[in-house]
Length: 204
Image (cartoon, rainbow, N blue to C red; front, side, top):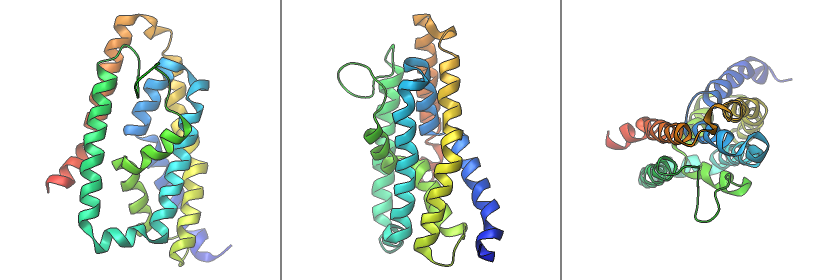
Protein backbone atom coordinates (compact mmCIF):
# COMPACT_ATOMS: atom_id res chain seq x y z
CA UNK A 1 0.00 0.00 0.00
CA UNK A 2 1.45 3.42 -0.99
CA UNK A 3 2.89 5.52 1.82
CA UNK A 4 0.54 8.44 1.00
CA UNK A 5 -2.52 6.25 1.44
CA UNK A 6 -1.23 4.65 4.65
CA UNK A 7 -0.45 8.00 6.27
CA UNK A 8 -3.61 9.79 5.12
CA UNK A 9 -6.18 7.00 5.56
CA UNK A 10 -6.74 7.59 9.32
CA UNK A 11 -7.48 11.24 8.59
CA UNK A 12 -9.88 10.25 5.81
CA UNK A 13 -11.68 7.77 8.08
CA UNK A 14 -11.94 10.32 10.90
CA UNK A 15 -13.27 12.97 8.51
CA UNK A 16 -15.93 10.58 7.15
CA UNK A 17 -16.89 9.48 10.67
CA UNK A 18 -17.31 13.00 12.04
CA UNK A 19 -19.17 14.40 9.03
CA UNK A 20 -21.59 11.49 8.61
CA UNK A 21 -22.49 10.84 12.26
CA UNK A 22 -23.13 14.46 13.27
CA UNK A 23 -26.53 16.16 12.81
CA UNK A 24 -27.46 17.48 9.40
CA UNK A 25 -30.32 17.30 6.87
CA UNK A 26 -29.75 13.61 6.08
CA UNK A 27 -29.58 12.43 9.68
CA UNK A 28 -32.48 14.59 10.83
CA UNK A 29 -34.65 13.10 8.08
CA UNK A 30 -33.48 9.56 8.86
CA UNK A 31 -34.37 9.98 12.53
CA UNK A 32 -37.84 11.21 11.56
CA UNK A 33 -38.23 8.43 8.98
CA UNK A 34 -37.22 5.81 11.54
CA UNK A 35 -39.95 7.06 13.88
CA UNK A 36 -42.66 7.28 11.23
CA UNK A 37 -41.84 4.27 9.06
CA UNK A 38 -39.37 2.04 10.93
CA UNK A 39 -35.81 0.97 10.18
CA UNK A 40 -36.55 -1.59 7.45
CA UNK A 41 -38.67 0.77 5.36
CA UNK A 42 -35.98 3.46 5.75
CA UNK A 43 -33.22 1.22 4.32
CA UNK A 44 -33.66 2.46 0.69
CA UNK A 45 -33.33 6.03 2.01
CA UNK A 46 -30.07 5.14 3.78
CA UNK A 47 -28.67 3.32 0.73
CA UNK A 48 -29.59 6.31 -1.43
CA UNK A 49 -27.72 8.68 0.88
CA UNK A 50 -24.54 6.57 0.79
CA UNK A 51 -24.73 6.17 -2.99
CA UNK A 52 -25.55 9.83 -3.56
CA UNK A 53 -22.63 11.09 -1.46
CA UNK A 54 -20.27 8.67 -3.26
CA UNK A 55 -21.49 9.86 -6.68
CA UNK A 56 -21.14 13.49 -5.59
CA UNK A 57 -17.59 12.81 -4.40
CA UNK A 58 -16.72 11.25 -7.76
CA UNK A 59 -18.29 14.14 -9.67
CA UNK A 60 -16.25 16.68 -7.70
CA UNK A 61 -13.09 14.62 -8.07
CA UNK A 62 -13.49 14.32 -11.81
CA UNK A 63 -14.08 17.96 -12.62
CA UNK A 64 -17.13 19.55 -11.00
CA UNK A 65 -15.01 21.09 -8.25
CA UNK A 66 -12.91 22.84 -10.89
CA UNK A 67 -16.07 24.20 -12.52
CA UNK A 68 -17.13 25.75 -9.20
CA UNK A 69 -13.66 27.26 -8.83
CA UNK A 70 -13.83 28.86 -12.28
CA UNK A 71 -17.48 29.95 -11.98
CA UNK A 72 -18.26 30.65 -8.28
CA UNK A 73 -21.74 31.91 -9.19
CA UNK A 74 -22.75 28.31 -10.00
CA UNK A 75 -22.13 27.27 -6.42
CA UNK A 76 -23.99 30.34 -5.11
CA UNK A 77 -27.05 29.44 -7.21
CA UNK A 78 -26.89 25.84 -6.02
CA UNK A 79 -26.59 26.98 -2.40
CA UNK A 80 -29.62 29.28 -2.69
CA UNK A 81 -31.73 26.53 -4.29
CA UNK A 82 -30.65 24.07 -1.59
CA UNK A 83 -31.67 26.39 1.24
CA UNK A 84 -35.04 27.12 -0.39
CA UNK A 85 -35.84 23.44 -0.92
CA UNK A 86 -34.81 22.40 2.59
CA UNK A 87 -36.96 25.16 4.11
CA UNK A 88 -39.90 23.81 2.10
CA UNK A 89 -39.10 20.29 3.28
CA UNK A 90 -38.92 21.46 6.91
CA UNK A 91 -42.34 23.07 6.53
CA UNK A 92 -43.79 19.83 5.11
CA UNK A 93 -42.40 17.81 8.02
CA UNK A 94 -43.44 20.29 10.70
CA UNK A 95 -47.04 20.65 9.49
CA UNK A 96 -47.73 16.92 9.08
CA UNK A 97 -48.74 14.23 11.53
CA UNK A 98 -46.37 12.02 9.55
CA UNK A 99 -43.32 12.74 7.44
CA UNK A 100 -44.66 13.34 3.93
CA UNK A 101 -41.99 14.08 1.39
CA UNK A 102 -44.24 14.47 -1.63
CA UNK A 103 -47.92 14.44 -2.59
CA UNK A 104 -49.88 11.26 -2.08
CA UNK A 105 -49.62 8.53 0.54
CA UNK A 106 -47.02 9.31 3.24
CA UNK A 107 -44.03 7.05 2.73
CA UNK A 108 -40.27 7.12 3.28
CA UNK A 109 -37.95 8.68 0.75
CA UNK A 110 -37.04 6.26 -2.03
CA UNK A 111 -33.51 5.23 -3.04
CA UNK A 112 -33.43 7.47 -6.11
CA UNK A 113 -34.97 10.43 -4.27
CA UNK A 114 -32.26 10.13 -1.61
CA UNK A 115 -29.53 9.94 -4.29
CA UNK A 116 -30.90 13.06 -6.00
CA UNK A 117 -31.33 14.87 -2.67
CA UNK A 118 -27.56 14.89 -2.08
CA UNK A 119 -27.13 17.29 -5.00
CA UNK A 120 -29.07 19.97 -3.10
CA UNK A 121 -27.85 19.03 0.39
CA UNK A 122 -25.50 21.78 1.64
CA UNK A 123 -23.80 19.49 4.15
CA UNK A 124 -23.11 16.86 1.48
CA UNK A 125 -21.47 19.50 -0.71
CA UNK A 126 -19.41 20.74 2.24
CA UNK A 127 -18.29 17.17 2.94
CA UNK A 128 -17.17 16.29 -0.56
CA UNK A 129 -15.61 19.65 -1.44
CA UNK A 130 -13.62 19.67 1.80
CA UNK A 131 -12.59 16.04 1.35
CA UNK A 132 -11.50 16.69 -2.22
CA UNK A 133 -9.26 19.58 -1.22
CA UNK A 134 -7.89 18.52 2.18
CA UNK A 135 -7.82 14.70 2.37
CA UNK A 136 -5.12 13.35 0.06
CA UNK A 137 -5.28 9.56 -0.11
CA UNK A 138 -3.63 9.70 -3.53
CA UNK A 139 -1.68 12.24 -5.56
CA UNK A 140 -4.08 11.58 -8.46
CA UNK A 141 -7.14 13.81 -7.97
CA UNK A 142 -9.55 11.38 -9.64
CA UNK A 143 -8.27 8.30 -7.81
CA UNK A 144 -8.38 10.26 -4.57
CA UNK A 145 -12.10 10.81 -5.20
CA UNK A 146 -12.62 7.07 -5.80
CA UNK A 147 -10.87 6.23 -2.52
CA UNK A 148 -12.75 8.86 -0.51
CA UNK A 149 -16.11 7.83 -1.97
CA UNK A 150 -15.35 4.29 -0.79
CA UNK A 151 -14.45 5.57 2.68
CA UNK A 152 -17.69 7.56 2.84
CA UNK A 153 -19.73 4.43 2.03
CA UNK A 154 -17.88 2.05 4.39
CA UNK A 155 -17.73 4.46 7.33
CA UNK A 156 -20.81 6.54 6.63
CA UNK A 157 -23.48 3.85 6.23
CA UNK A 158 -23.17 2.48 9.80
CA UNK A 159 -23.17 6.06 11.12
CA UNK A 160 -26.37 7.12 9.38
CA UNK A 161 -27.94 3.76 10.28
CA UNK A 162 -27.71 4.76 13.94
CA UNK A 163 -30.06 7.68 13.30
CA UNK A 164 -32.70 5.52 11.62
CA UNK A 165 -32.32 2.90 14.36
CA UNK A 166 -32.73 5.62 16.98
CA UNK A 167 -35.96 6.67 15.32
CA UNK A 168 -37.15 3.06 15.32
CA UNK A 169 -36.41 2.84 19.05
CA UNK A 170 -38.56 5.91 19.70
CA UNK A 171 -41.62 4.57 17.86
CA UNK A 172 -43.31 3.22 20.99
CA UNK A 173 -42.92 6.48 22.90
CA UNK A 174 -44.12 8.48 19.90
CA UNK A 175 -47.12 6.29 19.12
CA UNK A 176 -49.22 9.07 20.67
CA UNK A 177 -50.32 11.40 17.85
CA UNK A 178 -49.65 14.57 19.84
CA UNK A 179 -46.14 13.49 20.84
CA UNK A 180 -45.44 12.52 17.23
CA UNK A 181 -46.57 15.95 16.07
CA UNK A 182 -44.25 17.64 18.60
CA UNK A 183 -41.40 15.39 17.44
CA UNK A 184 -41.97 16.28 13.77
CA UNK A 185 -42.05 20.00 14.57
CA UNK A 186 -38.77 19.57 16.48
CA UNK A 187 -37.22 17.72 13.52
CA UNK A 188 -38.36 20.52 11.21
CA UNK A 189 -36.70 23.13 13.45
CA UNK A 190 -33.47 21.10 13.58
CA UNK A 191 -33.52 20.82 9.80
CA UNK A 192 -33.78 24.62 9.58
CA UNK A 193 -30.95 25.04 12.12
CA UNK A 194 -28.75 22.68 10.08
CA UNK A 195 -28.89 25.26 7.28
CA UNK A 196 -27.07 27.89 9.37
CA UNK A 197 -23.59 27.29 7.84
CA UNK A 198 -24.99 27.47 4.31
CA UNK A 199 -26.97 30.64 5.02
CA UNK A 200 -23.98 32.24 6.76
CA UNK A 201 -21.76 31.47 3.76
CA UNK A 202 -24.43 32.70 1.33
CA UNK A 203 -24.80 36.04 3.15
CA UNK A 204 -21.07 36.56 3.66
